[in-house]
View (tube, rainbow, N blue to C red):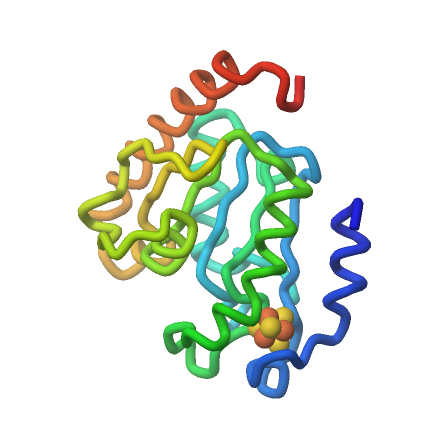
Amino acid sequence: MDTLKELAAQIGDCHRCPLGDTRTHLVFGVGREDADIMFVGEAPGRNEDLKGEPFVGAAGKLLDELLASIGLHRSDVYIANILKCRPPGNRNPEPLEIDTCTPFLREQVRLVSPRVIVTLGNFATRFVLKTTEGITRIRGTVQHAGRFTVLPIFHPAAALYDGSKRDVLFADFALLGEVCETARTANPEVHP
Ligand code: SF4
């Protein structure tokens, strides 16, 4: 498989796990196909399920503000989730769903080939870093997974319920700007 379009076609009208029966729309991912930065979230929420796009609604608006704070627009980055379909009632992803769906995310990461992966919240961070560490402890620290630099941060939706996380998110995005510059200098042959 050489392109995200081919991958989307392969996923098709997926019913490989039970979430295929309860979703409205499968949310594949969106953004620049050769982005330097890839954001990995947890799963579509209600608005994303209805529209078929990741990060719409209030959490998406905050993500746009965070990107703008370091001079980026969402068309500059790639955004995907651990799960491509909404768990009913926004419950946590289950292990079977993660095991079944994440091969698609792995392919997205391979095809986009970002310099930096930003994991949003516990599930994305635990999956990408293969850690049991909670996001509150690990956020804002520069990590590595294979050839990727990884920056775990709070999920923007968490800041909608806890205002204190908003300032933390803006601080972590400032760090993201620095991390990207460092990764670009260290590995100039990726997306030259
Ligand atoms: S969550 Fe993933 S594996 Fe499950 S039906 Fe949706 S696309 Fe398929």
